[in-house]
Length: 350
Image (tube, rainbow, N blue to C red; front, side, top):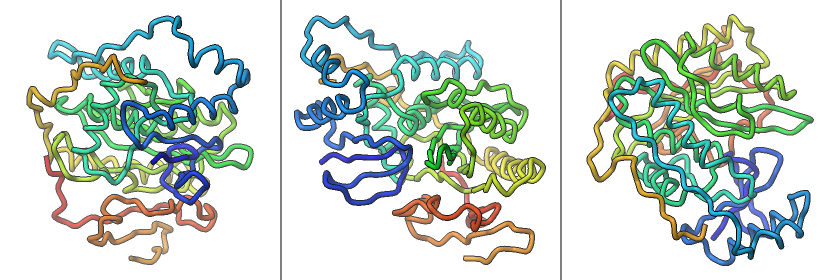
């Protein structure tokens, strides 16, 4: 069964064609049947393309059944050897994802469930490499996690954005990175300055502000920023990714308040970094998977305005996910900062 979404968000509701999720202002489908792509999904993708492409059916007729199209070059998986700096490795990973290109078809080829264990998400990343098809931002985060597994000293954590433009809400996610006192980001977007950030920022706050400044160039107002916890380097881990340990209401925080809260979280993460170390993958699980060439293509708010939530031992709370994203709430009524409290003995298992 396939799914239709608006963006890469987690909110769901029923539609005529099954469940679909909402994020950006454009609906898109999700291939939930795997590969090779079945005829139903294939035809539905082209029907959707005909509706959203400026040339409509003319473009579909010109491309869909044309057997003389130029051969598509399959990008090579980057080889991250010991002679490269960490910054060079991250740039190589980003370049590989850019070679896959951003997916404009209106059909997401790889289904990503954010509450799935890491070992399952790594399998999805390997499938992305085999199929070598265009990807969206959420897929890029998972692929970047897989490609950077085992880089000693590198820490990764998700950063999510909720923005508003012409009355519509848009959501985006990238993979924040930290190494030797410097921060950056990996990801995919329609806009070059809303994905990759080189490993050159002195603080996590500077990364967040740089993304906010980039959004403003496209007349987007940033409403919320969510920062997760470090992701394990163990490709066989059954942990889930914590996507939103810290939630920031950007409309109600001054720059000084923003910096205070983000750097507090960054300091907390750095203390966690010391408790974890990258896990080397076996030969059978290295990132160099050959591309498949024959595929068809709580607590109450405190007086200082910081809202804390005590984490309960449910799967939903561990992942930070809920069936309907709380981002749909009124930003003016939400607390300035939401921080999920973990158990005192919490450690990242690697």
